[in-house]
Each structure stands twice: as C-alpha cells, then as structure tokens.
Image (cartoon, rainbow, N blue to C red; front, side, top):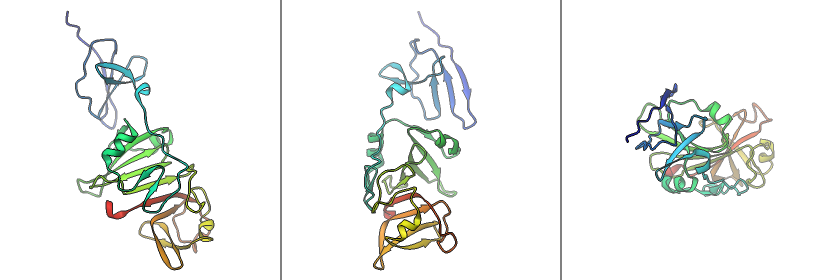
Length: 230
C-alpha cells in the first residue's frame, strides 16, 4: 500500500519554507535546502539523517569555543587559528542554522545560545562575507572570497585576554600598557609599544571615538586578524 503524506507548509517573511509533518510516516524529503525547515506536530524541529527523522537538538553536536584562550595577535583566539579553511571550521563546529543576506539577525543574536552562520553581501557586488557567530557575538569567525579564516572577534563574556585585557575592560586600562592610535576608517583602536605597531589586533569600544572626545570607553570587541587573507 502506498501511503500519501500530507503536511502543512508555512512561509516566513525571509522566504524560509516551514513544513509540519508526522515523522512516523515513511517519508524521504530528498534534498533539504537551507530555505526549508521541518517540524513535527509538537513543534520540535527535525533533521533527516540515515533514513530517520530525529529531533534537531538531539543531533546538534557543536564545538564549544575555548573562552579562556589567550589572544595572540595575527595568530589565534578562542581555539581557532587564523588561516584555517572554511571547510575545516565547518567540520569542527558541526551543523548550524544559516541566515541569508536579507535576514535581520539582531533579535536572533539576542536569544542565540549556539553557533549560527550569517551571510552578508559586500556592497553591491555578488560577493559575500560569511561569519560564524557564537551566542550574542561572544565569538565571531569571518571568511571572504578566499574562504580562509582571516578574523576572530571576541566580545563581552570572553575570559581570555591580551596582557590581561579583555572585552568589558576600560580602554584606559589599555592605555596604561600601550600607546593608542585611533583608526577613524574602522572606528577602532590600534596599539603600539616603543613606537612600534603591534599588528594583527584591534579594539572596538562602545563609543567608537578618539579618547580626546570620550575618555571613558569600554572595550566591546577585540579583533585578532590577518587582513591579507580576506
């Protein structure tokens, strides 16, 4: 006997097609695109693996970043090494939800408790920045055309640091250790020591302004990067 499957379909504002099914039925969905999501009648999100429907949470085995790792300029942060390939990072992190260039992610990040993959268009070109975001940008990994990890940004809640400095600290603490140079092009602070630039690291604050305009600022993000790998 051939069993016909009936499922309900909803379409979200971002174009994602949501299908509500009974996973007990013998139903092979074929290729599930990133614009399709399956749920059971109890509201649990489903994945189709090895010929079986499984609840999404039971199959999600994502890598937890090392939030205690030291920040090494131009080299590494959070357990990731600058120069790693996108394919290697995908294999490390595991399955994630992907959010396309037309999706608003601010509210998603506020309630996010895992990794998501975000796609953003570069200007008006058909080129994109891909970024893995962990929780509310506690750790973010960035890739462009070369599909090579060129930047790791860490935010408030990250426990590792650079010379003991971490997101959430006052920018004045940074000025006690290093000479600061505000970069107006990126609204970030660069650092020097003995008049020598320290490359591969920058600091973004809440006000994103020179110290002469706003002396009291809090470090929001620290970026470890190699721009030549973009």
